[in-house]
Image (cartoon, rainbow, N blue to C red; front, side, top):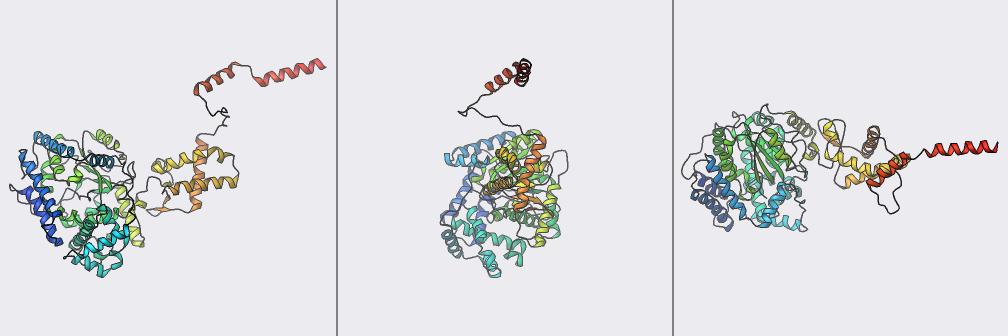
Length: 531
């Protein structure tokens, strides 16, 4: 699965790339050579040769179809042609590759588990690192803080990103530190986790603008949803500042323990109200830089969704799709329509839409993003080893507190259903038995990787066992108020019943005289006879 591709918008103050007949060719082949030079790789190796050939073949196909390499498609006809080329390319994929792309898009990918020989793979990765001649930034970081660079969980991020290919992971970790050194220098940030305090004023300006946001809820498969809103970018912020902010934001996402195990993140790119010319210029300005940064990136993408309301943007999106990594193109979906139609399209892929930060007729919503900024800053100031999954609760987590967001959270709804399974026993149990039932439900939830979280000091914090049991008791109290339990009647001895039989029985009883009244009359007549 391909690593995360950073945003598509950049600072217009950077000198534009020359537009020549070989512009696309330069971007696709020369940049690979640049990465090889940076890593001091043998450019005649089969891996590099195949990568270069792939880019050349892609451009050749583009040209043979009658499309220009010095610009994006400009008309609907050209956009249709690109769509056909991409469809032909996807058709050539194996059945397994097609199924995997579909499963990733709809969140049906199973959780990735570490292989049994993971320690051997880590050792092999270290051997491959030593084979790379130019690894100055990596060695410097290791000298400054060997514990951080050699940490098992940190190195596993690279193996996960390259699907446990030790050689590719070795190249990625070396490139990661090269990129980090280029953007953040040789200071302490090179050899530790990035902090918000490492960002400059301009870096923070871009980070707080909300152009990149993480939704406060996950998709139906429990994956993080990363939203890009390039239409709200601030072009006055320099390119390096944007990149530093993006890398910091991306590395914070990686602190989520299941970000890579569940197939990666879901990327939603909103192009509502965008200017075609503006996006063209921005994309050309940054494309070369992205080639280098992407090789050191870590976030995997499970699916990409473009949202457009103007049909004239179709040619641009076609060009962007053509420039995406080959393995990622099959996981791209483009949605057209008004805002309600676009929301419905996302919902069909299990993506929540109630908290989307963008709207075609409103300014960008920063409420959730500001909350993320405050929470992350406070946790860093406290020195806590915080993780994004505390910022964005997992789907089986149970949230304490009030409000619609809490009530409708997947984990709370699920916990309510589990509580209903034990409801009859709970209602007839004594005090100590009720505690035991609540304890059992808490255990069930925690065994499925669910936690009980309370919003405290701008962050979700795990509560103790007593608070978790109290939350389960609250489910019963709250349900009792809304829907008082009725005494269940004994079912037939064979365990079968039908709605028709139940209704017939009720009608029959209503038609018969009251049995209690009949008994009273018989007693009264007997008493009169005896007297």
